Image (tube, rainbow, N blue to C red; front, side, top):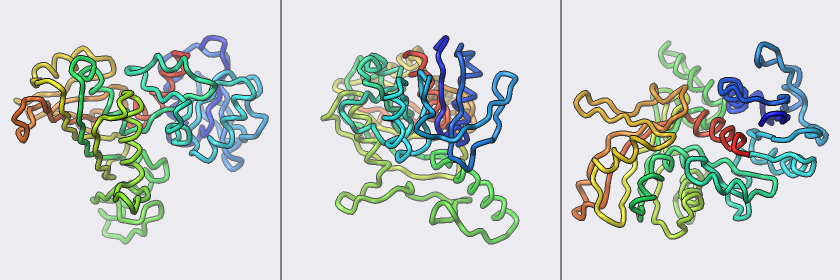
Amino acid sequence: MKNKTVAIVGATGAVGREFIGCIESRGIDIKALKLLASARSAGKAYPFRGKDLIVEELTDKSFDGVDIALFSAGSGISKQYAPIAVKAGAVVVDNSSAFRADPAIPLVVPEINARRIADHKGIIANPNCSAITTLVPLWPIHQVNRIKRLIVSTYQAASGGGAALMEELEESTRAYLDGKEYAPKVVKYPYAFNLFSHNTAIDMATGYNDEETKVIRESKKIFEEPDMAINATCVRVPILRAHSVSMTFECERPITPEEVRELLAKAPGVKLVDDWANNYFPMPKDASGQGDVLAGRIRRDLSDNSGKAISMFVAADQLLKGAALNAVQIAELL
């Protein structure tokens, strides 16, 4: 990325601010960083390498001279402005759902399918945060013993709903502890000390919400396994910024927990947290603020007599590996 001008679209949002932090903390050598957001956010200042960068209003002319554009401002903005950025000569790494299902657009997790970056025609899609969290620790297993079936239950943090939902969790929790009423603004249900089905629309034909459909569809695309049997249940939990996933996967051949641990111990982007003696396994508090997917609770699926199924629990920072960090890794590989 040396001598490249990078633009961040949605720079004032939760993921946008993490883009800034990732570029700075990783010491990425860039020519310039341009912060873009809506007109109401223009003029805000954010520190970057000892200086304050001023947020500019996003317009059709914002991408002149931009080499790489990191988008995290929602699918509507991406659909409108990503083609404009590409036409201006930038490569777009988009964090929304706008382009993920398009078979012509690479959907990339660098630890899994970095080679697909070369297929881009101006836009690269950053996957759903729960799909990333699920698939990074499964990939090294899938490479040596193909996974045929996967069942996941997600425990998704407020950060997946943006800065406003994180604020609602904090405010509603404070009100709950103070014995005060709090009227939800971002989601329909009380968030403090509660959990509920992921707040995306339910498909009335299948009963699955949009988040569950994304996890299923994107996992098949990233693994390039259209016939893999996958089922997902996605739940929003009162955690600020780290997603967790409980999963059970079935391989083609028998596999042991010891084999899984050995594979994950040397897998890129994975940290093994599997301390049975102390009942210490992946937790959101440990996942938050760091870039690995924590994996543990690795054990045989007792409902399977074939020895081919394993259950596991993982956690990862939704704003980092689930969003900003994954996109910045893609940009580095560009």
